[in-house]
Length: 208
Image 1 (tube, helix red, strand yellow):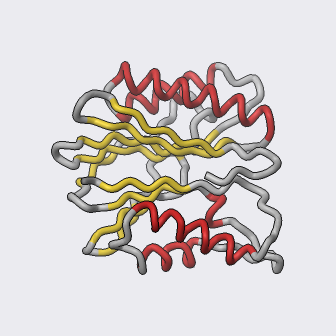
Image 2 (cartoon, rainbow, N blue to C red):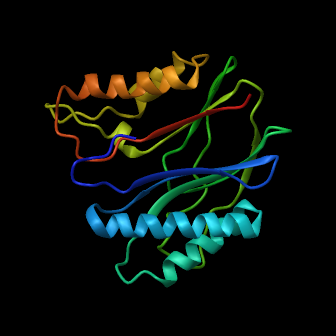
């Protein structure tokens, strides 16, 4: 993560649920500065608590959303991708609340995991549905925020989804750490020193 000087609202987290399952999350709070930071902290804490107690992606997201809607005097909201990976089987259950669609990379190529709901904090009775896919051994998951695709250069052009997807298409077998470095390097090169207006965040996981 490369934070913006003005304080963006990006966040990510990963933690074990038990000896076989790992939870992962990434999100982006609408807004910047102290209010966004406070809402982000509440969102992370609420999500962690719900995940540990609910043991289910859909119920975790529904509980997180309801809590953030209830205690939300500032009328803030956040995009949120939350998933649970079973390390034994590769089953990957996820819900995407209005966040940038993640990608998986393997020898078979790239696939996209679509959005399944609206951002959290907006409507207490609306939440993302859960979807399931299988991550094969050696398959890589790429999570990111809009700070990557919306990075600007001095000509006010965006890095864009097409450029990012082309980068991933050429890196389907690259290890996570070099791929992460390449993403940041490509964004920096494209920006040509332009002011970074938003956090630039990417999280890359590979099933062993």
